[in-house]
Length: 59
Image (cartoon, rainbow, N blue to C red; front, side, top):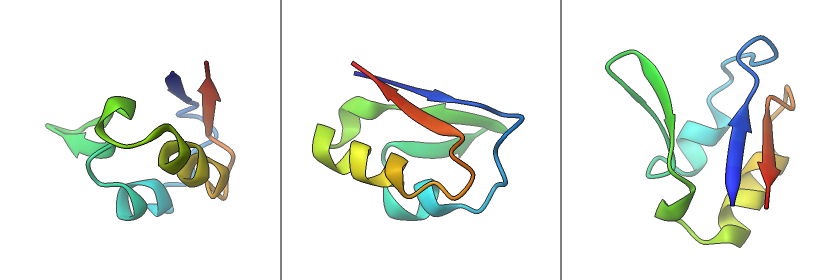
């Protein structure tokens, strides 16, 4: 599974980072996504909550 982030669409609401901090995090000023750090169901659920639809899941 791959999670893609549309930087231009992102509103930086923080829903992803607050919901799954092991998957979605900021390191050294860069947004890092590690979908292997949680279950597929958890990642899909968090992506679906993104208010700007900047995150998408690709299998």
